[in-house]
Length: 197
Image (cartoon, rainbow, N blue to C red):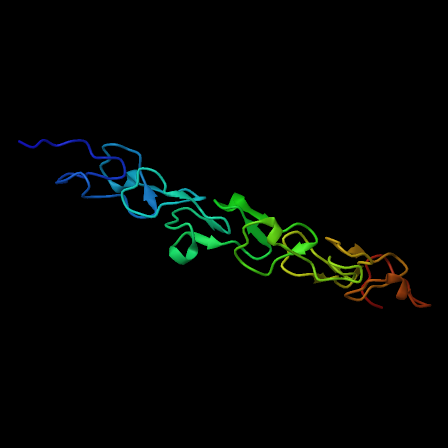
């Protein structure tokens, strides 16, 4: 004579269940509860982890490097399923959740998706002194490209993560590297940060 038993972790046994693995927690969820009676006992896979099959009693694993997983991920990589995404441009991802998304360091960038290590970040376009963010540009942390200094600012150095405000007595059109080339003309005054006369 057969006897019933408690429902296993990763499964739910509502009234009328005929066998222990009849109602598994769906893909993207898991449950460690023994004797669960409904799907509310199946928890969404937490950010940073993925749950790639039904009936899991723990998440399947950590999201792959070069990707990040949001809650409910069904795969470690986006080509395989929902809830995981390629690391965004200008960043690298150590794997796991959004806390593993790190910006490329100042003076570097990345136009590509899916970087998995800081060494994959590229040095900003070559300037006159080689290899880093050029003059009249800046490379903010996490930038995908060197950015021209906006009007009212300048950068006379390479490798800058921000442009400097144009000093009083001068004006700076966009993409300025030497503010001294643009003194305020006779009959005008130029407060700091001025863009044009």
